[in-house]
Image (cartoon, rainbow over all chains, first blue to last red):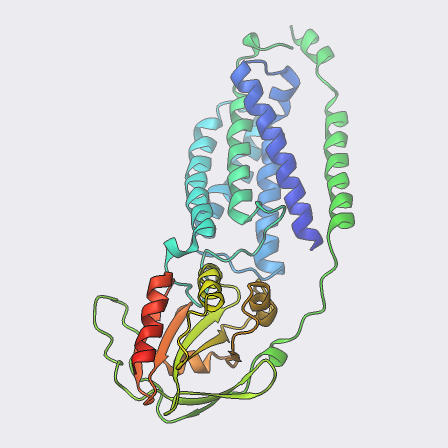
Length: 170
Length: 215
């Protein structure tokens, strides 16, 4: 399916950007341009994840399970939170964004665990069990995995934005 | 300081264009690399006609598995359903003991059960006097691993007798079962010997087969 492949490739791209951001943060070599684009990019990642999630539930007809809803709650507001922060150049937005993202990541991790070991969640509820693999691209990218990548990317982008310009190379 | 920053920072328009080009590139790669969807059978083509004689099991499988199942010892419903070759298969009634395994193609716990079933079948672990019958239920063409017969063949269980529940899970409901995978053991005298829901280890499956054989 083209949409799944597109979403999977965007998730990999996001993962690569996130790893690069983490490396920059750990080595404390954050270019000024990266700091400047971090919040707009974070906004776009949150927007992409939100639109992708809505596509799956409203167009493709994959009903969100309970754990999906908790992850949505952690990601959807980030579009507004990061969008406003990007507009106002608020580099302290990580104080709001990171806790939200961490909550989402915690649910993503558990969702991934029960996808890998479905019996941990008990027998399949006929209505909408969280263990169904609606999407599986490249053998590892499922919906909670993509949510996990999104959460990590949002944390990395907001932390990039808060880096001290005096300690980073231009 | 700000002048220095502006000269070393790439133009925002250039960055936006690079971003757009990246997304467009990803879209093209996705379009070119995604496979064509196969022509799959419809729900009506897969769901079977099910005829139920006698009373369905009136007691749902107990939520608390520590509680003895009150349905054990009741007469099992006699059901006629079709296999994937459109041949009628009778479930229940007097005759051979049967172990029924209700499987939903989209249920990952059912998928987890398949290797256990295959190992038992491959090792000739089903007693001669017992019929192991798979029942494809929970049918939904919009969910993963459709159609179910292909899913079972891919798991190496294509040779096991497999019957088709109807689109409303009539067979499974007739046994008072509500979650997948589910198990029902019907003795040679037509009574219900055991029910289970959820993943069973090989030893649990063997116990059900032994109970059926002992009847």
